[in-house]
Every structure is written in structure tokens, then in C-alpha cells.
Amino acid sequence: MFGSVAELVIPNQVRILAGPTFKSKGNRMRDPERIESILHLIKKAWKRNPDWRLCQLLSNMSVAVGWKNFDLFYLEDDLLREGLNNYLIFIHNSEKGD
Image 1 (cartoon, one colour):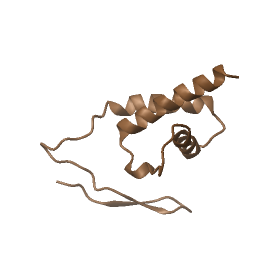
Image 2 (cartoon, helix red, strand yellow):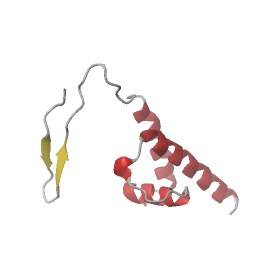
Image 3 (cartoon, helix red, strand yellow):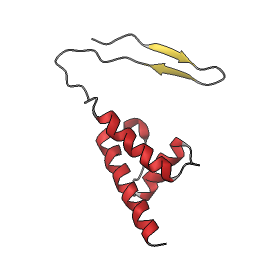
Image 4 (tube, one colour):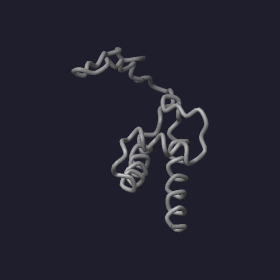
């Protein structure tokens, strides 16, 4: 069963369509534990580049790791985690070469 679709309105911003929310029994849901590990990697990468905006960080990461046709909407979390790990390795290796 799907939850209702709600429209979020942010003042002076675009309207965002939120939902539907997945609430079905028996269907595979993504592991909620992935959230902390991904946020940890984002935090590590962002602290290395604190002047960048979040989307700028993710865009620059995608270029650094060689992704083509990068689209956040369709990006699975395991691929994002892998990209962030590779990006942190890239940054580390770049700093060693300085």
C-alpha cells in the first residue's frame, strides 16, 4: 500500500512533490542502516571542502571518480557510497602528491 502524495511548499521556492511513501508488508525495503554510513562519508568529504555547497560536492565527486551522465535522482545508495569512498581515496592521493 502506498501513502498519500503530499505537496511541500517552501516559501519563495519551487514546489516539491513528496511521496508516495512505501508502506507495504513483504516487499523489500532499503536498509535504514545505510543512511548513517553514507552521511558519514558525505561529512568526511565535505569537511575536506567546506566552502563547497552539497550539490557542488556531489557534482565534483562524480567528475573526480569518472562518472558519466551523473543523475542524483537515479543513483542507488550503494553506488553513491562507492563513489564517495573512491573520492576520498582520490583526495588523499592528490594531497600526498602535493
